[in-house]
Length: 374
Image 1 (cartoon, rainbow, N blue to C red):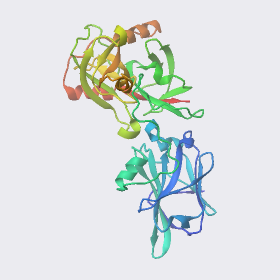
Image 2 (cartoon, helix red, strand yellow):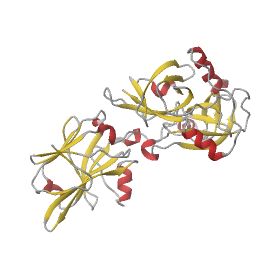
Image 3 (cartoon, one colour):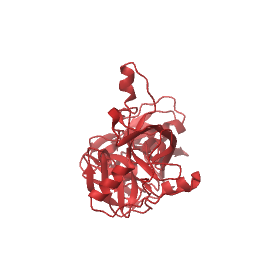
Image 4 (cartoon, one colour):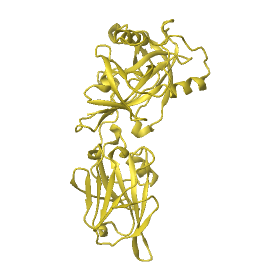
């Protein structure tokens, strides 16, 4: 089998068939299509698990991109997890290069015509934000993407949805956020890991195990080899109404990218729904995937863990209006769970430096993205 390299070019015959096969754990989430400069998408047919076939290159004309993409990219995930990948053209077999970045849509190759000869240039570049980003980059006003399985993007029922869906065993079930609170200890929401068989840190792919799960308070304590510094829990001073806070996490990774997101707001209520004193309300915007992230004060001390958003749509259906109401779990509950699990108690010595740049730099080193497998 020939190993292809990005930028490599070779001739094709118009009547040849082409097939692409993905053998990674998320291969069932991908589809392949040839997309012409005119915005026409020619679907590859699914020929088996992770395998896509085009019966004749003649059907795409003289120019097209061969694109593999996550079919339900609003639910998170990247094509990288479907590799290794191979391509067969006629009787020739090739191994495709793995993308160097996390991409939800990857251009496998660019087909073009030169001096009357059909040719192909190998590529492994693409778009973190998925097939929609590809469409925007090509300025296509309207294009029907084959095998598209988009889900409801704007759900707002608590707890905050975290790219979750039913998957085959070993495939990605969902993503969420977590906070390093001690040596090799991470806290997240119980609903982030609910229903999963295993979880790993998205950046390092280091697996973590659940030490304790408190479903009533929606908290989970995970253990594993983690690179980063624990954030101190603020237990020495209570929250006060109107206090400025920042929410940090990894919302909508497929649309917004895989880097940490930080938003600002204030404490808008000192209790949760129905007077729940274990929670508080805050206004810093969050999104699907933010669950389990850190809510910190001006100095970067953890005052809570992001948990949910108010079901605005349900309120509107009842004739009420309420926007930007989110809920956090108070840091004291995290401290108590760590103690109950018999683990070393976390640091509660507070930071005092309120330089915003330094605070955000600490968050980058302490808030992690978690991937959950079915």
